Length: 154
Image (cartoon, rainbow, N blue to C red; front, side, top):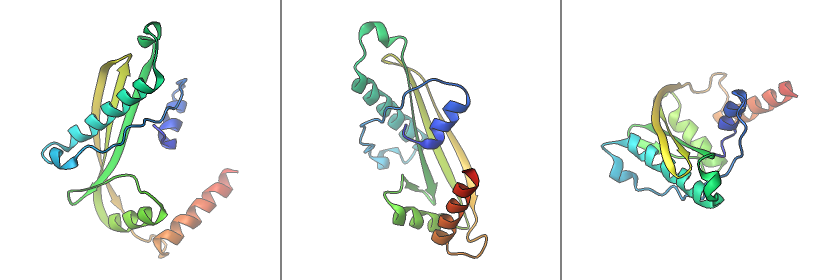
């Protein structure tokens, strides 16, 4: 996973790991999963893990000592699934859509040991996104808040 949040989480529990971004296109047809959306995320993470496994081409001795973990997170509001924003404008549009709404955040996880799937699971969280806490336009607020946090961290 290329997620900075996931990287930080794994570091916080003391794991030693390398990040290898999957080349999986994440193009599974979501319409096939309308009755079981959780399976969409599990299938996506399984495909991500399998692609990473193929990318690293381990020899036979390394296979059983190597663990690959993949994850995928998306949001859903009113039965519409939102993937990763493609740019700042798309992120802004998504934030506006989620404003003053309760939406779901789905995460699927897959863990491989060698070429065998040893664990898959799926979690759902509900979030309430509050609009314009300080009466700023959302984009301006996010920009200013990020700058404030960056200054305090340094």
